[in-house]
Amino acid sequence: MKKRDYYLTVISLILLVIFLYFADRYMDAYIVRILNLCAIYTVLGLSMNLINGFTGLFSLGHAGFMAIGAYTTAILTLSVNAKAQNFFLEPIAAPLANVVLPFFPSLLLAGILAALAGFLIGAPALRLKGDYLAIATLGFAEIIRVIFTNTQNITNGALGLKGIPAYTNLWWSYGIAAFTVLFMVLLINSSYGRAFKAIREDEIAAESMGINLFKHKVMSFTIGAFFAGIGGGLLGNLLGTIDPAMFKFTLTFNILLIIVLGGMGSISGTVISAFVVTISQEALRFLDQPMDLGFIVIPGVAGMRMVVFSILLMLVVLFYRHGLMGTNEFSWDRLINILSFKKPLLKGGKK
Amino acid sequence: MEMLKTDGITMQFGGLTAVKDFNLVLNKGEIVALIGPNGAGKTTAFNMITGVYIPTKGKIYYKGKDITQMAPHNITKLGIARTFQNIRLFKDLSVLDNVLIANHLHIKSNLFEALLRLSKYKNEDKKMLKKSLDLLEIVGLLDVKNEKSSSLPYGMQRRLEIARAGGRNPEVLLREEAAGGMEPKETEDLREFIKQIRDDFDLTIFMIEHHMQVVMGISERIYVFDYGITIAHGNPNEIQNNQRVIEAYLGVDDNA
Image (cartoon, rainbow over all chains, first blue to last red; front, side, top):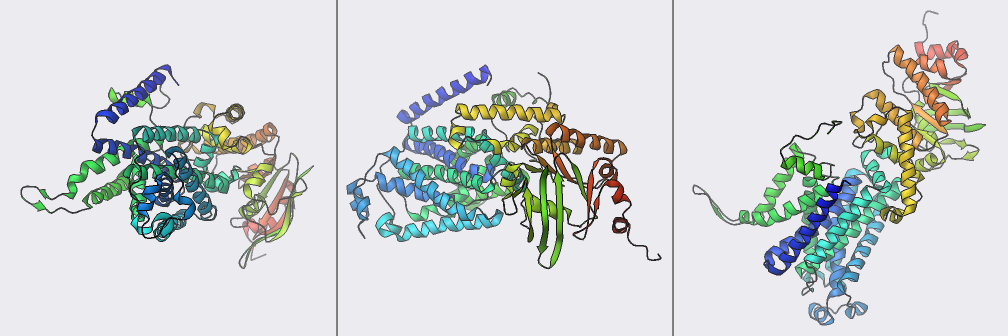
């Protein structure tokens, strides 16, 4: 790395920490919550991008992994009293009733359980390709949701869980988001990451390069599931309430939207797009309200935002398929070029 | 020394016999060609040797070891590399990445050692990079190492594929060339290039080749396929004068 880039990176990280400190202390709860969501969606987007964007596996099972993560952390962090209050229809299964763990081990366990589920579903499902894999993983997510709706004495069924301690704060969510970014950068730039990309580009050629397709696919899928579980855990302890209906396909769709907009196969694209999408989902809330355009009055339609987002996704896929970043990554050179309105150097050009 | 041997391999797809009783022997250092009209089963034969298809009948031996049932990536690890008719580069990745990927199978560090960039991985990574750059130098692509591989002209893509094959440390190279027009100069270059890589990488080469000047110029032995059956086998001279080969290529004269 160039010295200038090194300083710029350190400075922006310090600025981020100062900003977080400021936001944590002085900003109102609504904004802090949106900031938290941005970081959580970064984690979720990166985990999905590893599977779909870098390894080229069209998986739609993300909501399932998140559900596993969210329920694991929620059940492990709920206090004994809160558990008794929640499970009034049927008491919670005995060993879980008295288990209360701190946040970090709960999150870790959430990730591990989600990864285990990823491994178990991945081993058979990853023999499928393309659309078939998408259908199988979509089915998996639905199965998880139905199971969680019916295991009354473990997940409290359709009633959901309330009063989950709000452990997720800016430090947790941004700390984990930063760790995830670092992890992905190290992974993608290692020999294993290159093998993932080779599988995305051409499976037959990758196999003839001596890459064990199955092993690497399962590896990528399991790591993706791990971070999805952690993201789900963070989300549960941010919102304070979870129920199975939260983990429907729309949740997977939201994350898919982030990675497609940001660029399938770009870490920085996912980070940028996670912020853009999360913030605009809040900023565009006025679309759900009744609107008076002077000559016409549009009645408030709940879900109008999602219509706008769906149209946005269609436009991206039609006209701008590579998303914001394509498979490129952020670099200071590029940013400085954009900021100073310079044309980027032609390939092979000398400075 | 016998590198590769097939013992009567046969491939049936439903009622269609794509390859029937193919007996191949490859000795170390040889350049052997497989020729035949379109649809004769040449690519199927390659697919059986590389493990993409498991033969319906027959056995394949590599250095005396039975590899008939092995998975493609394991066959590659043993030392049989393959290039494709339609090239199959990793199009979106750089030239250097394409070659680095071919070295991945030699990586012994596990995922965590790679993630934490422990010295074991770092050493392997350094070795891998040096070897890849050497390979690119041999095929003359060092100057374009950071270009996207799909942006290279056709001839360079072919060379890149050879460099990529070299990354796997193969002892046997199965080389598949697409039929296509070539100028006399290019034919000459290709002949030289094949001999050069045989010597540089110490290879045994088995190739599907459509350019007769190339085939006749450098092959030591030739197998000829027609409708999946080996109709002839011999040195270039014998093949050129073989009546069945001439018929397969030119058709039978009805008036004769």
